Every structure is written in structure tokens, then in C-alpha cells.
Image (tube, rainbow, N blue to C red; front, side, top):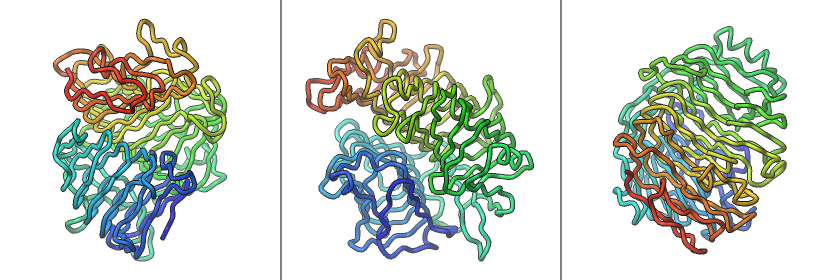
Length: 494
């Protein structure tokens, strides 16, 4: 029984999950936190087949805990022992032969997978391209189900070919359904390890950038990497893959990583931790004004997590900026910390989570939380989001601190007034104003009322009456009420 804690990943080294069979369980539980699973962050299980001892594997996680390319020869329980609070989660390219039981899990997103059954839903269960998924039925029960995923490309992974390590880069799929690995060899490209600079603790930004300039890809081994200049990814099709939650910390207020406006960059499996000096941005995909068409070979951002505060003091004005067209954000957690070290309304100031300027950007599994102002701002055309999970900042000291002109509070997800086409499915925002429970938030979502701007299955929730939403989107949707933690929903907008 591999019991996964913080900053721990377990991964098989086969080309298929069935090449590495684990007779037993890969478990995440919440005994360390009195049965509360809402802080089981930063861990992963990938590319394994499991034969669970009891027939069911327990995976009680919260954010930043992907379950990818897994074959569970039995059931999967997403709740902690005792069915305490749980707030996850993400599954992709996986097959669960038995039933998935979320039980107390508040929300979940599953993509391009196969399940033998699904027992229940609490607030927001979203599926795209999942064989065996429950039928569309939001809000009762709150299942949002898309038959296929519009565009997807699975995360690169390390594997052994004989005695040689290689990195497999899966191919792009359109309108995908089910796993990539069930029928013969997966589609994609194998890269030998000699095409990578294996980044080890002690490496500097200068040596990393020198390796990139020589045409190498990057494989970050587990560790914490301080950078005094941005890591510049300028070559098309570059792979930047982290193992074991490798963490990049920008020093002196620099941007941790900048990607040029080129085709097919793959960023995957690392954490960016803001430093104590404010960074204007932490990750930039494409320069400002980028306008090249990348639809044939988009850049992907997968299991890239951002943290401001929590591990120590940190500040950043905007965490992630997506300027390149056609970028796919596939599972991210962008988090201004609400607990841990270096936490306070101004101590870990971070006004904006994700800003999307590029056109035709797709987000599959977007988790963005606790920013001082907007969590997500979308300026690009033809943007799409499948599943969004958000909590507004817990620590707003009073109503005045979040006053947004004439609007009470900043929307969790704002589509700019200039946008003509945008679509979202399965989006939720929660408030928990622990410093002042009288704070009102006018809405969780804000968008222009235009025929091309459409949302499906929106919800807002007040956690135990700690603050209230007046509406769901714009001035539409009922207010949340009293201390009852019951979602207010809008099934279709406009």
C-alpha cells in the first residue's frame, strides 16, 4: 500500500499502464487532518495498473492531485475514511473497471476515460469524453456530461524502453472519448533522454537557458529551483517535464518562465512558487500581442501548479498569462494561499489568477482560488472552459476591500465586455469570508450578454453562511441563503 503524502508522485515506467501492475493500493486518506481531505494537495499517481486489496482503491484528494493514465482493476473511492469533507479533483486517460464513488467529494472533473459506474454527485461533477459517465442532468443530480473533449493531448511521461529512459509525447486528439492506451500502441512520439537536459538541484537559470538554446528539452528532477531570470522556452515542440512536483521559485521579482509564440510546447508536472519580491507574472505563454495560429499543434499546460504564499512569503500581480492562440490548459491549480506561512490580505498579495488574451484557448480542469481581485479574466475570442472550481479569497477584511466600482466583489470568472464568443460548462464558485461573514459578493460570474457567449451549469455556494452571493452570473440567479450550504444554480446563460 503506497500511501502518498505531500510532494509525492508514483508513476509506472511502461508505455502502457498495464505494463506496471501494482498488487495493492495507491492511497490518499485524511487521517493526518482528522478525516478532512480538503488539504490533500500536490501529489499524483500515473501510468499504473492497480489490483486493490479490498477491491476498491481510496483516492481522497483535493486540488493539484492528478490521477492520470491509471487502470484500476476494481473500484475507486474518492472520499476519506469516515466520509469527511473532500474537495477535488481530476482524472484523465484512465480506466476504472469498477464503480467510482465520490461520496463526500464536492466536485470532480474526469476527462477521456472509462468508468464502470459512478455513484453520486454533491455540487459539480463534470465529464468530457468519458465512457460510462452518467447522463447530463444538472442540477439534480449535478452531472455535466459532454460526449467528447473538443481537443486534448495527454501529458508527456517518462518510460523505460529496454534499459533506456525515454519520454513519450502523446499525439493531439480531437473529439476524443476514452483512453489513449486501450487499443494497441499509443499514438505519439518517443524522445530519447539524450535530447533532454536533466535538471538537478543546484542548476541555475543561466544553465537551464543555455541547454534550451542548444535545442534540448528539460526534465526537472524533484527539487526546489531558484531562478534569477526567466526560463525562456523559445523553440517549437520543446518539452518541459517535472518529476515529483519539481518547484521553481523566481527571485527578485522575475517571471519564472516565458514561452515564445511557437507551436507545440509541452509544459507539464511542475510547481511555481512566488518569491517574496512581487513578480508581475509567474508564467507567460506567448508574448503580448501573440497572434500565430497554433490550432494544428497547440501548446499544452498540464499539471502546472502555481502557489502564492503558504510555503513562505510570496507575491505576484498576475500568476498565469496566456497570450498564444489555441493553448490548452489541462488541469492547473493556481492558488493564492489561505493557510500556511506568509499568509494575509496584503502579505501574499496577488490580484489576478489567470488572464487569457489568446484566441481559441481551451481549459479542461481549471482550478483557481483566493485572488484579491479577479481569479480568471478572459479577453480572447472563442475561449472554452470545461470545469472550473473556485473559492473567493477567505481573508478579505471587509466589504470595502473587495468593492469593484459599483459592483460588490470581483467575479471569480469574468469574460471581458469586448468578447463576442465564449463557452463554459460546469463552473462553480464558493465564498467563505472568514474575516467578515457580512460580506456580499454580487455574483460569481460576469459576462457580456451576447448570443455567442454561453454558459452551461453554473453554481455559487456560500459555505456555512460566511458571506453571500446575490446572484450567480451578472444579475441572474437566486441569492445564496442563510447558513445552509446549498448551491444557487443557473443551467443556461444567456
